Length: 87
Image (cartoon, rainbow, N blue to C red):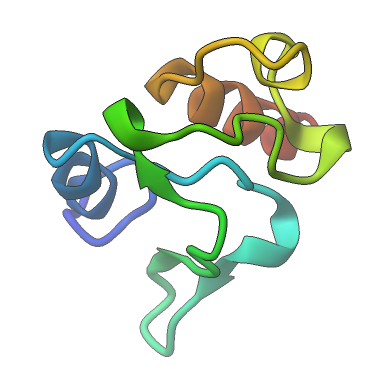
C-alpha cells in the first residue's frame, strides 16, 4: 500500500504523534488528482492525551466508547473507518 493512502503512511504519521481524527466519515475521505486517498477536516481531531470533549464527531460514525463519553483511542478512528467501509 502506498504511503499516501488513508491506511498507509499519512495515517501512521498522525498516529505516531497521537492524533485521533474522531470524525472519519465518507465526506471527510477524498481522492486526490492521482487517485490517492486523503483524510480531510481535522476540526474534531486532537492529541489523544489532551482530548477532553470525547463526544465530538458525527454520531453515525462514532465508536461506542466515544458515544458513551469514554476515552477515545486510535481504535475509535478504526471503528469509524470500518463503518465507512461497510457503507
